[in-house]
Structure formats: C-alpha cells, structure tokens
Image (cartoon, rainbow, N blue to C red; front, side, top):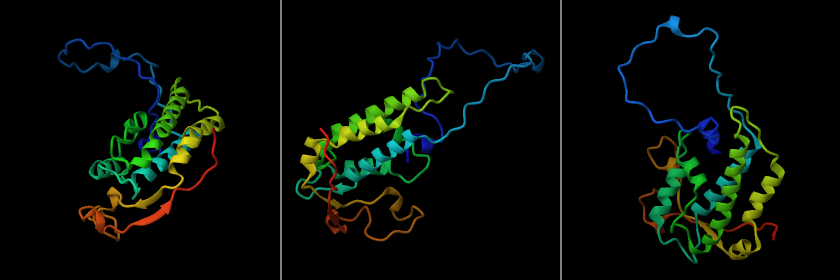
Length: 217
C-alpha cells in the first residue's frame, strides 16, 4: 500500500514554518462571547485515492521483491539487518509509520545480495521522481492536483528497467528465504513453514529467475 493510503491522509503538502513560541503563560479559558461570529476554520479535504498511489504501490512491490529474496551465488552478508528492514517496512499493520521516511530516503545499506546492489540506484531515482510528483500535486493543499501520470509512470519504470540493470540481473536466480513479520507465530495469523528463529539453512527455499522485461535506454 502507498504511504498515504496507509495513513489515510495527504503527507506531501508544504508545511509553513511556525514562528518561535513565546514563554508559556497560565492558561485562561476563552470567553465564548469573545469568539468572533462567522469565523469558520475550513476542514481539510477528505483523502482520496489517485494514480500516484498506484505508481507508489509498484515501487513497494519492487522493494519487497529484493528484500524477500536471496541470490545463492552472492548471498547477503547482513541477513539480520535485512530481516529488520523487512519487519519494519512490511509489518502488516495499517499504522505502519516507517513507509514514508523510507520512500523519501531509501537506503538499503549492506543487507542486499551483491547482485541486487545494481538495482538500488534505479529504485532511488524512481522514489525521487515519485515524491517530487506527490509534492507538486499537493503544493496548493488543500487543493489536490494530481499530475498527468502516464509520463511519470514511464519515467519511474524507465529509471529501473535500463540496460545496465537488466544486464546485471538477467541470470540471477532468486531464492525466497524469509517470512513477513505478520507471519511470525503469535501475530494472530496462521502460517505454515519454519520460524524466524530457525537456522537459515532450515528454511524452505523456492527458487525462480527474475522476470524479463523490455529494455529501455
């Protein structure tokens, strides 16, 4: 889900800096007779889905794919950091407040397999273009003006599906090796398979190759 869809609120509109606050004074309840008549504070606009949220969802699918898979030919050197990031971003909770900060600054550190590292610049450029589009759409908040999305979609996907990236991952065999945080026993959901605290080699692995896609320059 997109960050705004999880929060059910607009998150990219500009926030006017507040002036420094004066020292607090004893609180005095205002007299209702002192409140001017006819002064109404406009309610914020209701949150509505738009196409930018769909484009962000595609980005999260890509992030999910590289976090929840391993490359046996060059496995991750920091599996505990990868599991921590997976648990944080894909907690299965609608109150997840980790999505937006990561979308704004997607950093994977050293938790990815070496063959996946070539994907990171494309994912970061995708996120940069997307967050810029969100900011532009919400610049005049509370008026929301989503931009024309076909070109944005092409730009975002074009940042990821390039010849260097596709060339680096063409022969990568992905192995699904981890589980989602919400699938851990005790989370309230049934699951089958092994637990997070079992040895890495004891987990059931499913291998598959990365899907091919049209190459763009």
